[in-house]
Image 1 (cartoon, rainbow over the protein chains, first blue to last red):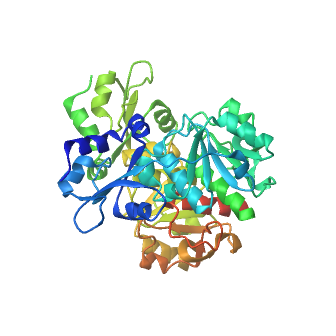
Image 2: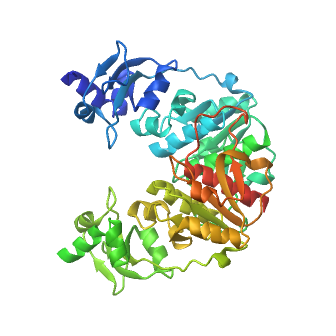
Image 3: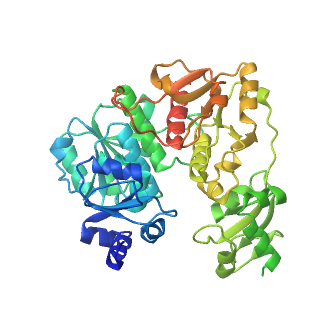
Length: 246
Length: 246
């Protein structure tokens, strides 16, 4: 049995301001919740149909009650309220690692896909401008398929963090229409890969910190390309190439 | 001014059965409709706000009327009803080309992303099983960003077409968990790249036609990977590698 106040709290977490104020986010589905349980994240409460989970933090609910809580189109058999983890960003600690930086990636589906592929390619940190989509948006959480538990997403003054990284000797790569052919460019094993907004690309302030501009060639490479690749797709192709070479 | 019958027709085209019966699909937005106009596709009618398009097939409508027609969350300034093109699939004609085959890719967003990246990588033909998402689904049409005009999507008995291709000497590649490392495998410049369903992967019947099984290595390559890449992402990474080598 759930109270009106509980329903109100869970539903309020669809909104970023409420997530920030409460320090909580929502995750749905048995697989994801099981993964969270065996991670370092702290679960405040699990609402689940009978027989799925047990423990003092579990409230058994009906499918109908879950429908009132869900932030998805179709309710799952379980929903958890989880504390938002806080990680301190230390630029020095990024040295020797491959890291992603996102300058205003706004579509939650794209952010979720990028977190998932970062996990696949062993990338542990993503820096995001404050104007990027929120990684605890329910759509992002579900799209990451659990990768959100292994990849740390840091919201930061991106221009400042990139400048600091560059001063610390970390190479910064970015994709630009005027960049060099990705496959004909020397790449270091570690560094920051900067990707930009879906429509406008990388902002001039962040672009100024880039040490090497890259370009994913279309096929044939000399074809005039009026079109572009989706930002998540471009991120995946660039990450695959960095990892292929290392 | 639009009639009730017109509104009914346009709205009915959200449904595949109606698109098939009428031989029509819907495309929205000035950029996409302009591209369709300069393509070989035939436009039955354009509904647009004043000042965007002119010609005998254009009906000037209000923003409010467009809201009644749209299949998107937010109505655009224009909507076109377009005749579905019919292309004959000839396996022999695929020789010497890089081609994609999709075995039950069901998510319209994934299909749209795949059509868009096929266009980027100069892939002109996609074979789809009849159980795949429909490429004239409004979500797919919008996600392809015009690529649907350049890439031909053929719905076919996929197992039969793949067998025929294999008998014609066309190599068939597919991604499988037990495949060879993509980056350590000899690839031909042309051939068919087969990708499978979001949850179940490639069906056994289609898998039996594959001449070379590939695997996109995670990083580090020997890491046990409980997770997987999204099918559109995997398609993009494999296509990029084929094109990098040719």
